[in-house]
Length: 189
Image (tube, rainbow, N blue to C red):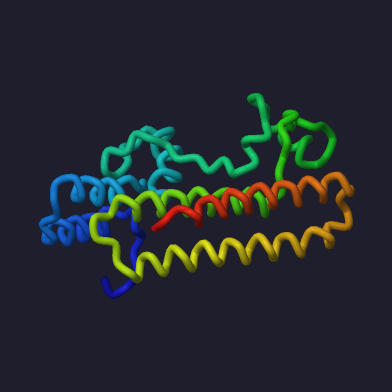
């Protein structure tokens, strides 16, 4: 289109499905490509569905699901809390967190990238005709992840408001992720 559009929009998916059909891929490849294309839900429609449904109106496209964006820290809560309890937690009047270890955002981000990298390597491994460009891209991604780990490691001494034990834990977490990355990079692409 002339202007960029949402990759979860019906318009985008319709156009991409037409492109996909024109490629005449084998059935298995076609099914995988179609699934990757259509798995996305429109966040805009999902977020707006709640007030539309509550008001008794019928949403566009017969949407019945409601999207919520809980945020990554939801994993560190272990109950259902009222708005007052959450506000008290936010302002430090109470603690609603469970006792799960809470890694730094850098380690959490790194975990997401490592999961993505492993998934891409797995896709590349089953590709009957991988391109040299795809192999270079995967190698560069791994190298960039290693650079990111090194950068995070350099940041740890700057965590001056954290305890020494916390900084040591972050370094240990980075070391574990580095070993995981080395294992992924050792797999032939």
